[in-house]
Image 1 (cartoon, rainbow, N blue to C red):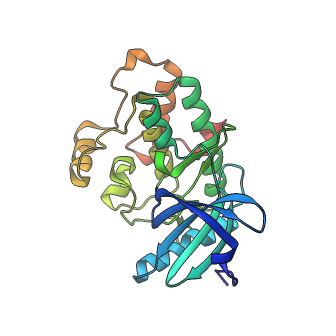
Image 2: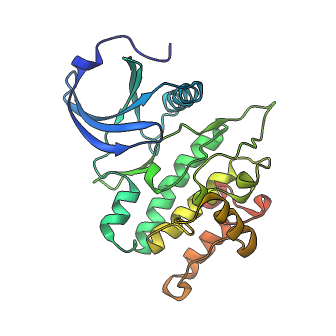
Length: 261
């Protein structure tokens, strides 16, 4: 069974709205059985696609126990909604942190976040899972400096029979060119997305973040991979890392394992 039986209305109390996740509103709540704070995403299952995405997310999170992936706790069906309970990260999203900084992160912080994300991606890719929606609002941080990937509604499970995907899904400013074109792609689309997150941390927002989807595609096709706007303000090491991630030719893009080495 995908969901648990029980009475979540009694189990979880003191709900506080945190915003929206990929498939629904997200709340902080108290788990009365443990005394711990948790995060709960409430997903409305009105369409077949939303139900598929929700099940997809639960299965991947349940089967992906890793220090850099947010911990799945439980799930319930409540009055037509799916409640997905995961560990609560007290630092919020990386996107929140960037807004609070009002500018950008220092290179040491960028390197630390990228390293932690790479470890999570390496684990997913070793399990033949593509995230397909790596971006700052899907990276959670803790006050203890922990960094975890979250929100796996768009992820894809690869198999020996289907080792590539071609669905054009994701968030435009973070999508790899081959995914935008609807071409066959593998796990390296996540590395491109992480490179965009690196640019986002260095400059405060993702390239072309304010542009509509087709315009993002046109700009990348015309100008090539995005680069730092103020290259002299950043080290050669950061430039090299971003270059390894942001390759318009997927074959030249480094894997998570190669970047960790």
